[in-house]
Length: 76
Image 1 (cartoon, one colour):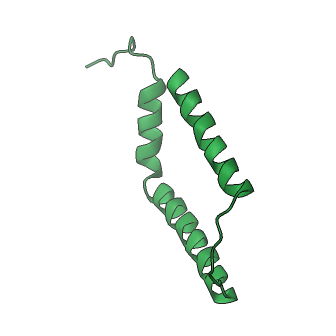
Image 2 (cartoon, rainbow, N blue to C red):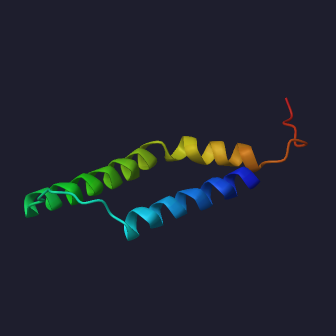
């Protein structure tokens, strides 16, 4: 658990460093690039939601199996 906390702190520190001290970049992003990025993010969101919808029954059974107690036995 300590390793996760240390890794999370390091990742946040690195992200903060990249935000506060960005390198000089000579690039141009036109509005079409921004809309393409937004379209890709929305497509990924919809793809994940459709995958969850398609496999919802299997997901429910998996969650039920994880949280059910092992002492319960089924009668033959």
